Image 1 (cartoon, helix red, strand yellow):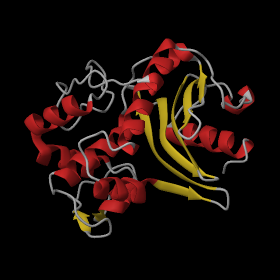
Image 2 (cartoon, rainbow, N blue to C red):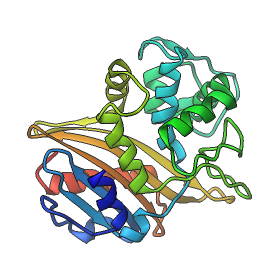
Image 3 (cartoon, helix red, strand yellow):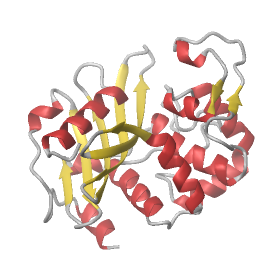
Image 4 (spheres, rainbow, N blue to C red):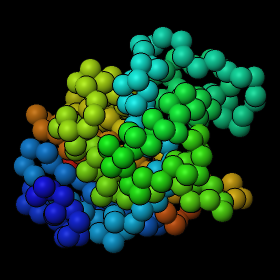
Length: 259
């Protein structure tokens, strides 16, 4: 509860927070919040932007996956899962059969759209309400509500809310088992060094012209016996994307000697 109050009061930083070199953000408008789960220290960059709700894009795959696991629709991470429908898409890695781990790693939208349809609107809405995910609006369509679409408003969430949900997930306060948490940790691992392990999920949003306009990277870091939860989104600048947001977060943790 204290963490929730601190985040939503919009105070820039608290004890245990480390200064961040703003040059690492480049020309992007960056919303970033990091919580040291051991000390309770909070670092927040641009509180107003951290409170701004945006499309979660593919970061929603974290919860789509957890719901699929809860309902028994997903099994082993390396078992065959997505069967390619033969439709050729721009991202070549999507144009083949994929295991669950592979689909998560390459952020295969068709695979997760199929999973959302299996879950169905009623069950999806129930879980969204239980989790308390953003504005809880899935009315844009069961297989598109987490994606930005011109003329449609889908589910929206802020960096503050993303972080709070991840914190609750790690605390075991969401409706998913320890087994489910272990699996999602496994597929979210993106970088491992001598200093730490970084877990996360990117997300990218495009406008009607296909230009990248939004990038997300959310997740957590294990380093030096401590754990840090973070949420970052970027807009503006040139080609804001999930990849660019991930680079920013990784560079920040490296500059702090945590990764």
